[in-house]
Image 1: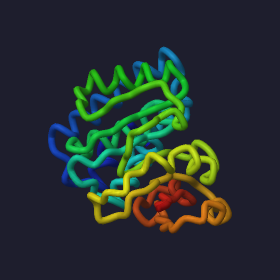
Image 2 (image 1 turned 90 degrees about the vertical axis):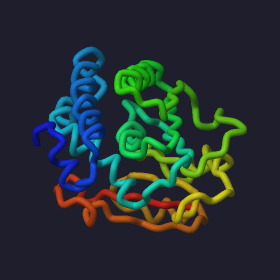
Image 3 (image 1 turned 30 degrees about the vertical axis):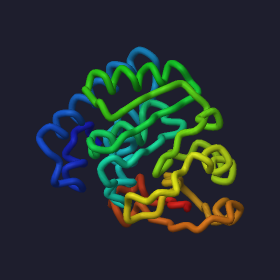
Image 4 (image 1 turned 90 degrees about the horizontal axis):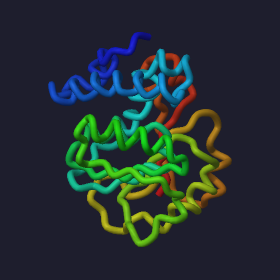
Length: 210
């Protein structure tokens, strides 16, 4: 799979020319940074658009965030799913955190170079985010769901802005029902293979926990 945004246009045909430009620019920035610090594996880097951009944007097939929605991305790594979502939803505010400083440095640089004013990135543990309420917390499989819920449960706002109930939107593969059962939360599972036809997404899901 070549790293072009044609794959994004296939599933998001309403991308503006500005959004297309930002995604194109982001590809180059990730390639530059990856040459410096090996942020993403070589195999994944060759499939950046599919395995990181499109994978992150599975969330955008589940919810069309309302303007001024507040979203926290926990364990963002190189900025996923936060940066692709921030490009797609310029009127939504994203707070990206990770415990690894060099990754946050990359995220800050890429967000700055792309001119994404709707991103704030910090080196921080989720448990240490105090007195801030978010409509949604997003992540890509940083740990088991019960543990993740214990980190962020108190950060989820009770005030509703979106059609989907406030909560966690978690991207994960494999069998997730046992983990979900341990949380005692309501949930919905969205099979990414029903959203995107590429084989990479065969076992992957977006889990809405609320």
